[in-house]
Image (cartoon, rainbow, N blue to C red):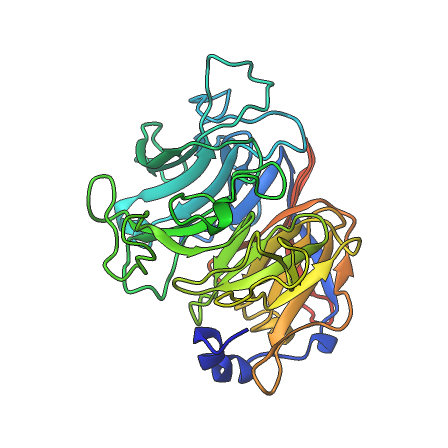
Length: 401
């Protein structure tokens, strides 16, 4: 990795990151019986609630004691507004994929969702390419129920295939633009990036995007976006992504960590910077992909870590731990493999280089679709199942809570 914002912030991390060997990672069950859960997050409103997103179109609330409220906060799936394209197939990558609350949600009640738009003229069980939508909703007078009216803010973005839809939408607490929303989109799907979208600056696909939902109609382009081409989309913040399924901002430093799902041999974690090119489909992880040898790496930003198959098969990005319950975990970025349920972490050494923990933290055997974070900075792990999806809290078993 070249010298960057990440290295400039290394002293911040060096003062706080503990040794991975001090951690005995474990999972503490919070709530279960979700259908295909893909995210757990918070509203930043001081309520202590946790919001759990189901891919089929529902968002549930867990109260501060971990009890699920009887009514969904929002239902845009087949039992509700019926706007989401998704099926009961475990491998379906379409659906309700992302949720982000506006930084001023406590006063303005605004939140945003990323989903695959349903085509009511097609068979609901068919895996057709569904366009990407980012829509704004408002909470109702009842703080535990959202209004059903939506405002489409971004999209529809046509998808050539049904997979690699990305997923995350996030606000950066360190961004000088309070209304700037970041969105991750995959390369359009299939395999090998057949349309070359990762390196194509004329498309939204294979990119991290950034746009201001507090200005313009329906949004404005922030003046400090990198503007990578004269005529291409100005929403592009970074490119060269295959499928950035989950990304997150470190709430203390503002660093943007992205777990990018690999093709067939390597999975990677990237630290995303303004205007960066993360290599797909020239490279997969640290290795050349197209061509398979002697590829031109000039101008590419390499991952901070990778793992190879069959050590795992699909990257699930996570969070930097900033809670107070488990001091040994502070400053470490935790991530997982979706297929085998393995959890690792990375931290910085004395020279500021990112290093993966020398041994596996834990091997759950679960399908880990996502991590989550609450208002206090505690991290959660989301197990992806048909009717027994579960949210766990990530803990250090050496600490008595």
